[in-house]
Length: 116
Length: 116
Image 1: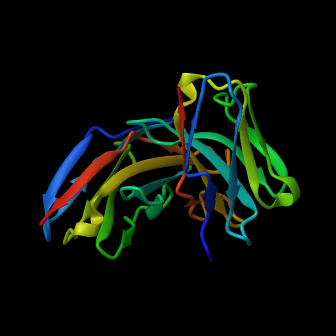
Image 2: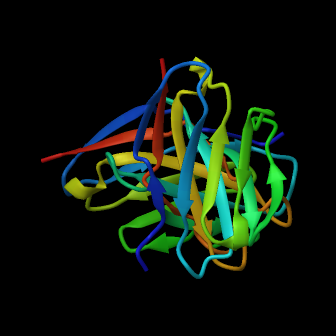
């Protein structure tokens, strides 16, 4: 168990640019989640995959955001035309079969995005 | 809509002493799960303890225990024999049973400092 891995750890970008983050979940976990955490707040749910299927998307996930999980392994989160309000920590988590209330979420270290 | 409130932005405790972190939540549903997650500085968020709403018995995990008061919608975390490694942000979280798998609702967190 090498844990949930996220890349990059930090990303600084100019407003209007596109960015993409990657998450590698724990290998036997079939569920993968993306959360966003802004300063002074708890994480907020963005989206959730079961295997390769994106089963839920939060209203926070505007049309500038897109997430994929090809082949049910790693996942990418892309933000197009970034805005300063997108500056946050983007957390990825995974869990085994059973769901987040039966099994604890295993979080990665996050990707800190700064939009200038 | 469900909400989670942590009314203590920051707390401190002396090493080896006991501290209680408060959490209240609001829901009209009867079946749900409650969690405390710990986020150490620059490290991954990890699950501390979990409570099923249908269980009257308070959950315990070594030095960590909860006081779950369902009628009052209160879910406090007690840390006994505090250790320096307990220094972290602590997030209370809620999820409906049978509902969204990913939509853990987090409070804003309590920053706990354990002083030597």
